[in-house]
Length: 318
Image (cartoon, rainbow, N blue to C red; front, side, top):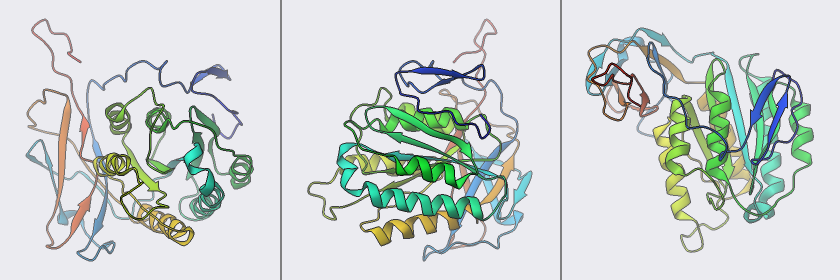
């Protein structure tokens, strides 16, 4: 899309622009196509010490990678990678978030400003909202004024299609170069999605997306909170190499976005070419990053979808 205004696209519509279809309906999209081969596997890795502090001074030899339990050789290593970020911001505008919408808008704008005014000059952001439908307000851009204008016109509506939003944004991210990030601002509930948890997670894993949920927690005790939704988002974050934030105040929300920017600026990129890896019955390869230094923790995605195996007739099985 470049920097061109696309407009609003509902989850029930299919709008063409410049001869390109822009489907934002999770119901209408075909099942994801699994890659028939995998060459270089790239893992974005955040490393933290025992106190949760970021560790930024590791070398290639500090990293060890297992693929389905088989040790691999690190072929690519970048410390504090500057590969461009494509960040899809998904903002919950359902009725349950209406009271917090203004502070969410302000925090998202501050985050977008930090993202686009610092770091790689090729970093971009896209803006979606979701309630009973998913709406693309701005395709990927570096124009902060464009995002600010779209944020100012928001209003809430019924329903929460959170899994649809993850699924659709992941599909849009898959074709982009560099690092793929989803920042999901929500209260953690899902009520109207056509896609479910597993389909949203699979779409993110196929697109090599790291998901960072920022869950607004107006109620600090468990009674009255959607704990199930928070647990689901925690799992999605863990399996995609992201992190969940649970701010309970406006200051906490701003702090969550500051921490998120800091983590994105200090990621390692570690890559390898899989070898001697046993086939996986469900096509998903489990990866594990180990660190030579004790007391450190590596945060990265849990794996990737690899080669499909031929059946007895030589055809690829999905």
